[in-house]
Length: 529
Image 1 (cartoon, one colour):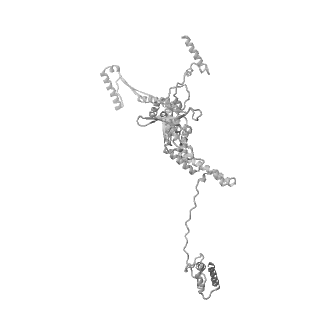
Image 2 (cartoon, one colour):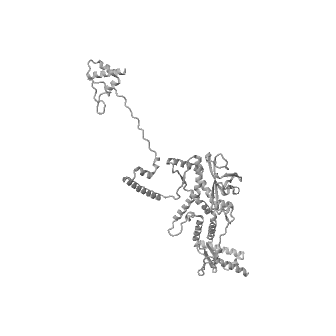
Image 3 (tube, helix red, strand yellow):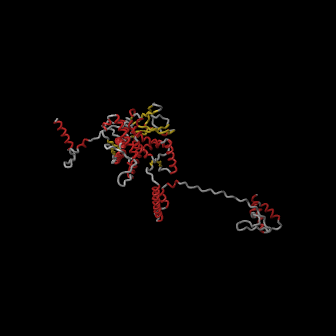
């Protein structure tokens, strides 16, 4: 026995003397040696049944699962085509948005993220009609119809029968090639269908070491674990604490009656009945007259339970849960942060930064996978996916931002104008620096067509004056009032020269001008013949 004790003491002395020690402060002495024997013990993974129960019955557990996916997909995303004109970009973006809406992509992606976080793994089956079996590679260019996206949790894929790529020369070496997916139809009926990896989008939970001394299932090492695994102990602590508080509320105030010879009274039926009647009378008088009547040897007291310090303890549990889940305490529980002048804004900024990181790491590859299938199917360019901001501004913040932008544009315009006045830049150079090629997409309005010009009817001829002179015209080229608007004699002659010739030949005497006119008309007639 003595040898055994000496061996233990020797081992203990080696434990306490390892590392830094201080005899005065007691550092690494026998008083602090207890912590050296504290170690973490693997408690095992939560079963699927426990995870389902937590999600269905514990509201906080369900919030831990759903809060991050809800924030990831809350504002959505937009499609950008930097190298294509604006009008064509809008047309392509509308086509992508229409297909995503038709297959309910946002809802399916969010649900897949729910099950991934709850079960530690999920998948999305891309269901299309491309004329090929589901066990064959997907051919985007042969797609006739994009049917839907089917969400699968980890348990709907038979991990034991997955076909892996065992050829080290192939790109997917060590990864699944065919997934055995279990489909349920009818009541209690199930069928398994092998699905090619090109038709599956995988999602993995919190990763675990591929090699571990703990007896972790191989499937869990492949898929990952639930987000509730690390928070389960804190959830249990919070649940038991709230249950204890609920029990204390029922016993918050306890009244105590003091009777003489209580044990003797309880020993007989008559004594019990008398005691009960006495207690009822005391309760009745207290509630009716707000006073009580006691015998000289009777007494009544009330013991109250103090709840001082319980809110602080609960807040500490909230903080630990917040640390386990990665959510700010203001976002997870909706409570104000502690500390002087604390608003929680910095916590929310950090949280939104982490959400954007998850968007880039998990949501973006899944969206891009679907986008590339649509791009090959519809033969349209592949867009750049840009997630919209998570934080929304109120009217005041929006107005302040618009004012800052307007002031900035005003300063910039003044600077450009100064450059133009100094001859440093030309207006077209400023236009290119400020707007680039974006103004080229603005359509130029077509010139408006003028209505056709209305033509006036021909003016009837005016007979010549008796003296052979032409009536004078007014300033506008019209004939004087009271006279018929007729064409000049020259126009008449050109219109009907034979009549003019006959008219001149009937005259007995002709003036020199008329004689010259007659000769000219006859010459023209001969030329025509």
